[in-house]
Length: 176
Image (cartoon, rainbow, N blue to C red; front, side, top):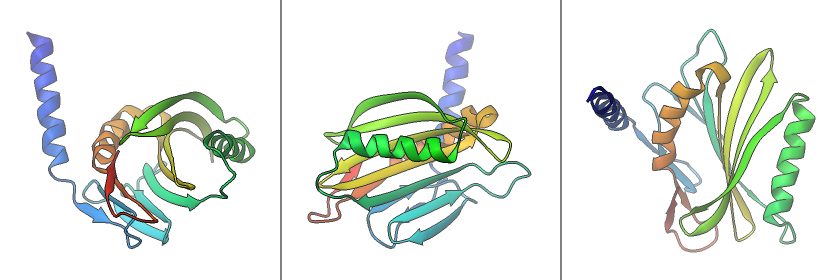
């Protein structure tokens, strides 16, 4: 009985939190998503948007959405390996926690979980990579390892709302 009550309270908390997230569509029109009230959005360029929590004394949790047009001869596995090599070159203590294949809107995608240290902070990251018609769509989420569970609850709400619109053709969203 106690566990059912706790689950119900958690569901109510997440549901009420979800309904307070404003909606945003990028200037490029490629991504739209809900984000936590009070977080900042910065469109770095037409292909990248960064969403950050309010300033804190410690590392600021964030997520980003980006797309990159790839050469036609680069496969999903090659793109994934290049991405992992870049992370290993930037973060010497980079640890790949796991990768999993997944299906998003009927398309193959890959999720990556990783840990590394940046400026003395132990971070945990989660990425989703979707390749469609030689375009790599990447969603990254990063937070302090010790605050990951709290951040993960927020990111799950964001992730559920993300829509990716095709670059080269139909403007039909693919929901993550």
